[in-house]
Image 1 (tube, rainbow, N blue to C red):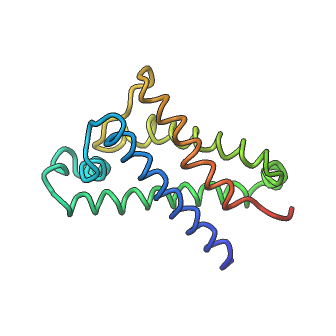
Image 2 (cartoon, rainbow, N blue to C red):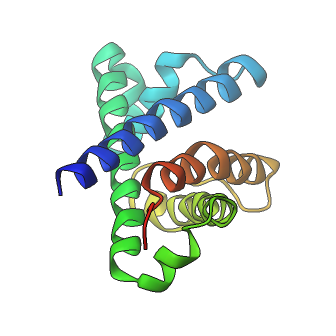
Length: 157
């Protein structure tokens, strides 16, 4: 069990870092719509609402904690899917299939977060018809699903 916990923590940390960098690069560097501080305050807005943007470093830190918590939660979801199904474990045993499953999982993560989770919070979801939805969907395939699948890929079935 210790090895499983280590893998889940590793996957969660890796996703937290990669997805955080993806968000900062996209919104700050490419689109020039935000600052790194406001990116993470925006995550805190899920709990605090618009007031999160008035909270300085404290609300950005809350956003960072929430971001890594969600990253670890998705790693746990993937791990539990592997644990509950021998068919899924066999499916992802081969590296190429693990990559495909991870990318599909990353897309699923974005869809669930945007269409189910965010509407339950004080944040605004991204409209499905917007180009940003597609950007986020593709990004999550690479920075969320793929790292989780590769870190948690079973070596022996």
